[in-house]
Image (tube, rainbow over the protein chains, first blue to last red):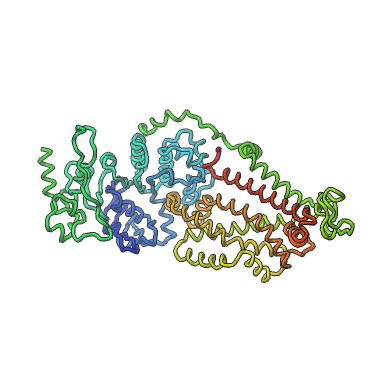
Length: 333
Length: 303
């Protein structure tokens, strides 16, 4: 499969009065056509900022993408002039946000919002765009779309609005959809529906997906590959299967242990990742995870562990990666 | 997909009440009147006043400029419906003709001033940074002068005429609108749907006019109704100072000034009736504005 998106050493920093916050600090990954990539990490680790950097929508000031390349479909998005970048947004790359309730303009009808990008990018006439919008609404499973399209966002439920957002994202047949925590604000019962819908549509149209989430279950089921982020860096990458079977970074291991499980007895204690994520303004030398890490050695304080392969297609940024992998292998055996 | 759509099937049969198609213009007017009786009342009064202004020659009982020594300070109800003024002119006829100047100046300057102010305020917020800084400093400078002083200065530069009064008052209303709407726009700017609009590749104009301004309209409507009353009185002040409309042209503000204030103990009707006229206009537009605001905001629709 051809590579659609290549992010190279992306750095986005926020220049505040107290100092420089390195929200995204040297992130690299690639994405094939039709692939679904999971971007996982806790709040504030730079997941959303890295997505917005690709779209070049970081509020500036205070934010600024200070380095790196974002090669999308052969061109570096970071070097495009604004007018061309606007043609990429919505047409080539679309986004779905976390809060469907606030991501739609409350005073505009669904029809006006759905037809907007069609008129903008595909030069459709009003009636054409409207027909297309109705078709899209039907596609994302909105019953009675002819009628519902005249309504306003407050007349929809959260799950329905997220479907509308997906219809909006799909409207110009983009090559890539970035979903920033698309199910966090929804009921558990609706979450699966929305994810199934996204997965189904991405398969049908060959759209690549980047799913940003802190929910490991979501990734396990829907992502082909997973990037785990911590303090602005990717610390582990691999297939979802690698990640669950042989986590090779202590942080990933911690994340897996901190998920409550229905199949374990209730008296079993949860094992959260101790401590707080580091202050991105004053990152310690060496590995950012060191202070919360059970496996930390002296070397961790001196140099930043680079992302390196532990097996084919499985990368980890930990000096103890091999030890961790062999441990899990023993356990599994 | 099959799995996804199964969940919705159950709810698809539900018909939500109050979501019928909107129907023809007349049906919409009818439903507006039923849901917002006060607003409809305001609309009717506002419309009536405009009709009065347009058909003034047919409604007035006398020539508003005709003086009559016998009718100086004639009390209302006697020979003249609303009494006579200090030179024996008919107060009622002057009120009817005065509606022309007062409504023209009031409506036009309130709308123009508030509209320009809104666009400036929202644009300033949208671009932010240096644009915001520069625009806001210019507005600071304008706000530093009392509105009336500013209008007088502009009138002095433009010369006395009815349209120049409108221009001067519009400019005087602009900065405070811009400042007030800026505060609203600052909140709107941070909303997710503005980011979502940028994500689909919307340009500056589309974001400002289609996404930000509709979300600021509630404040705008309130400001327009407030300015309407202010403009009618301010026009009188400008006229009194000799830089508005000529003193013989009847206007409500002009009638309130001068003799009405000096002889209020002698002939209260000189002040009461034009004052009442201004109060009714402002009240009617306030009611209409309030109702419009509710109807234009889909979140409040049907409440």
